[in-house]
Length: 90
Image (cartoon, rainbow, N blue to C red; front, side, top):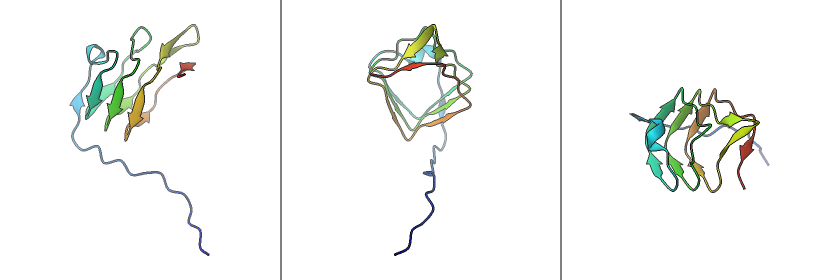
């Protein structure tokens, strides 16, 4: 029996459309978007879906005001260099 070292999945996100704070709203389906240098502290993103997206240097909130990620789905999404003191993800 041969076992291989686990490898991280390869994400080929291709060309992404720039994303803005106004794009992230409850129950929104976000596909192929690049969210960079954003502060999501006051944003309601409950039940949103991020498909084939990139989140870079995004602030997901602070301990006193965490972002509410209730029901949020991340699929084939790269999260890189982000900050999250506390996440509420029931």
